[in-house]
Image (cartoon, rainbow, N blue to C red):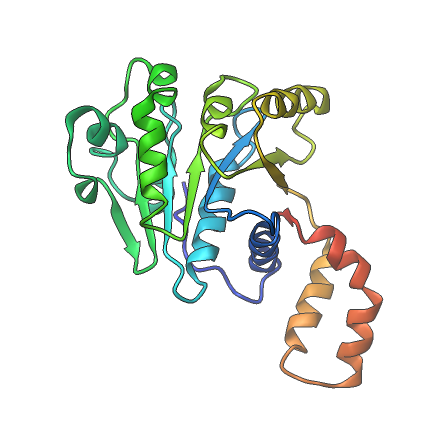
Length: 248
């Protein structure tokens, strides 16, 4: 599994994640959005890759401290994305009172990772406990944003349970992989739990060669102020607005 690193800032993928970052930041102007849960319909839609890159993108904002927390207590993945140990984590803090500072990994100055740690035999009970709700409230005071990876909502109820204790939910959809009827049922279950669904991310979108050529042209010309750049931006403005919420 490839570890999360700094993306080429002129690449279409980096631009897509910046757009997702902007959309999340302005998704609910009336309420402060700090804790954000990511889920999907089923496994292998790239949910953990998306949340890891989004969290990393937020950490690049000035004075923005980010925590990426793995609450997939059945199949934890986030620690692999950043190449850190899962020996100790959140469960060791909740069950054994291990200091939270000894469970968190500092990746860079502004991004920290909290893995699951010890695998519990009763994930649903732990996630629905008062202790978990209290922890989520407390951790908000230490970070500007807390991103939470959870199991697919179409498989188990874990994400629905946690959604009651976070500020917002992002839904990841694998292009040409997700059954839309299953996704609709899963999203309806989140709504019944009063989840604040901020939006969705279309992942694994196959960008065609002409689209990539446009991006390459646009960024190569970005440092210039010539007429050709302005014309190109105008011509493809609608395309960029519609497609940049997708991740290849």
